[in-house]
Amino acid sequence: MAISPEPHIGRFAAPLSLRTADGEISPRRLQLLAALSRSGSISGAAKAVGMSYKAAWDAVDAMNNLAGAALVDARHGGRGGGGAALTEAGQRLVQDHQRLQALQQAFLDQLNDAGDLGDSLAMLRRITMRTSARNALHGVVDSIRQGAVTCEINMRLAGEELLHAIVTRESAEELELQQGSEVQALIKASWIILTAPDANTASSARNRLCGRISRITPGEVNAEVVLELSGGQTLAATITRQSLDDMQLQPGAECCALIKASHVIIGVTE
Image (cartoon, rainbow, N blue to C red):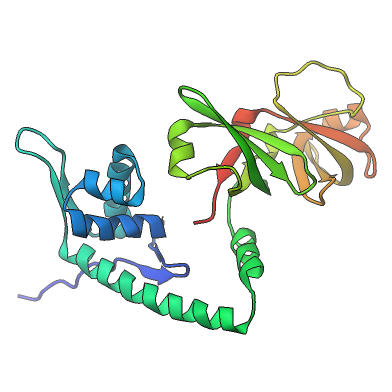
């Protein structure tokens, strides 16, 4: 009887993420696997890598789903207690990950010997990020205001503008957000409302970013209006063609964008 080949788990891609046909297993989740091999429990591994217990369970479920082969055999605690163990595929993955970490460190040591490339490498990570959101703005967390369920994340953009986002406390902890963290703000173009800079209309939108219109791409129904902000970053908004005509928007004119804080999605580079 022929033995079926083992399922293809995926391939590694720098920086030590595991890319599968269905998604990517992040380095932090790979660290969770290594911690699981040492602790033998979800709670112990979660504490070791700084995850919440729920986030660790979610990560284990996601990894088992994404890999195409079970990496972790885990059970919830109960009268008999809970535990977790890596499958053979999971153990092999952890071993390969550790070897690749050593190779990556040797590679980075060579890069450091060649000069300070840290800024360029960080920029490469940012510009290669792919997202369905039309706008991706780079910023630094200026402050965090915590609530019982949600947090207000205040980030400073390149032109010193402040952009405010509302995320759940769980998301803030999962992303390890803190003052000084580099983040990307993702904003869909359809979520942006444009207004004249001298308009005094009251609005519930927490964010008001003003700039100069750099280009307009009109369509039969909708139009895309691109604002250049003071720091050089651009912000694209999709509005109706009727609104474009009514507001008499033209390239070179000043305009402001209104954005609800709940419509700003925070992303980080692992």
